[in-house]
Length: 63
Image (tube, rainbow, N blue to C red; front, side, top):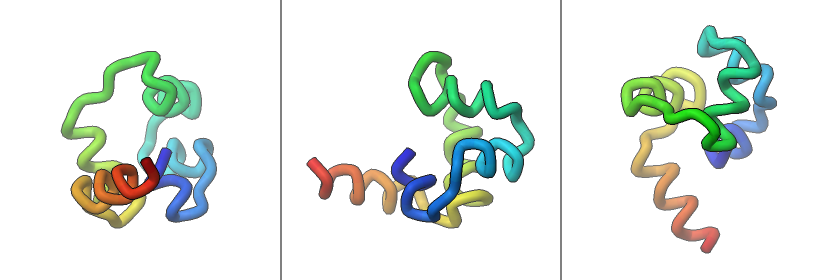
């Protein structure tokens, strides 16, 4: 969610760009379904254009 918000994207846009259904992406983001590291890494890189460490640092800074 942090990466999506940084880039100003909706869940629908992320799902479309990454090639999964909106429902699948919503479940991933809510934590209803476990997401593989490969998918998380690919979404960060391909969709958000951010590294996982960058997103983690931003999350840590929000707390």
